[in-house]
Amino acid sequence: MEIFRGRRLWIESRMIRLPNGIEKERIIVHPNNAVAILPLDRDRCKLLKQYRFAIDQYIFEAPAGTMEDGEKPLQTAHRELIEETGFSAQKMLEKGFIYTTPGYTDEKIFLFEARDLSPSLEYGKDEDEVIEVVDVAICDLPEMIHNGTIVDAKTICLIHRCFGC
Amino acid sequence: MEIFRGRRLWIESRMIRLPNGIEKERIIVHPNNAVAILPLDRDRCKLLKQYRFAIDQYIFEAPAGTMEDGEKPLQTAHRELIEETGFSAQKMLEKGFIYTTPGYTDEKIFLFEARDLSPSLEYGKDEDEVIEVVDVAICDLPEMIHNGTIVDAKTICLIHRCFGC
Image 1 (tube, helix red, strand yellow):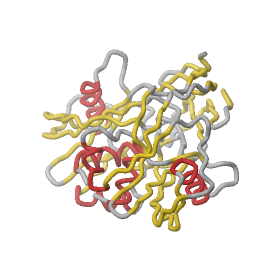
Image 2 (cartoon, helix red, strand yellow; image 1 turned 90 degrees about the vertical axis):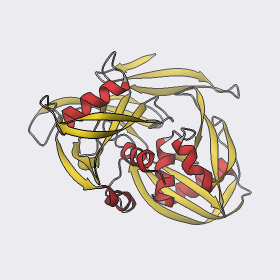
Image 3 (cartoon, one colour; image 1 turned 180 degrees about the vertical axis):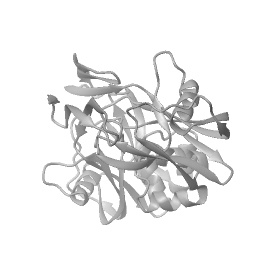
Image 4 (cartoon, chains in turn purple, yellow; image 1 turned 60 degrees about the horizontal axis):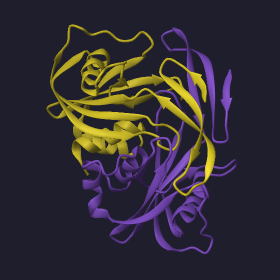
């Protein structure tokens, strides 16, 4: 049963049957799937300092955005990189996906590493995005995760998929 | 304006004013905050193979759970570790927190590393949890993340916070 339908997510109440036979009513939030991109330029990368209304804070994040209808993850990655950073990438390497919160959503974020960057003429932010592009040394990323400067889950997962452990 | 209130989350539609002055109506999902715990035992750790109805799949995850009213994260970590694995921990080390999906929720997950494990007499799963405890070599975790065996965001972040990059 649909409880709510918005522009970027819809919410469902569903009677589910677990593999052990138990039946329960549960809420499932269905956001649009999304992508996150780590743009690399030699020994540096570009992150965003972005205002997030849900937590009323600016946080460091990889460029990211939701997939439009009919878009493939790779297309979204190219589009969002330009929209959010002003740079386009010659190479966009797939780094798998994550489930952000499988306890109550089916949201999937596809991860990409962007290389061979150049300034794009198509640059244009969404008017409801409040972001600043920040240039960070790649060697500083582990410490930024460790000391809590980076607390955004998709960004930590993406850095991990790009550079391993 | 409250759109929905469930047992573990409530959903709000709010007129927000961005730092750039623009006003928009936005949906904010407010789940209970949660914890995730990586239980370590010498060169091995315990993960769960857990059925998630939102994605209709079994996935590998660190033990985790939502905070009850009045609980502190450390208390939830001790309780959930016992409930989900049957082991209690003498040491529970704080590994910071993450925002899972700051684009539309304020959900925070507090991360912990559990050590000095012993079987607990208080073991008892929630009846609506379908989980199996899996013993994994710590040295296999990077490859499990790299090859997509582990796709759960909080689990990847927790492994990263415990072992660095």
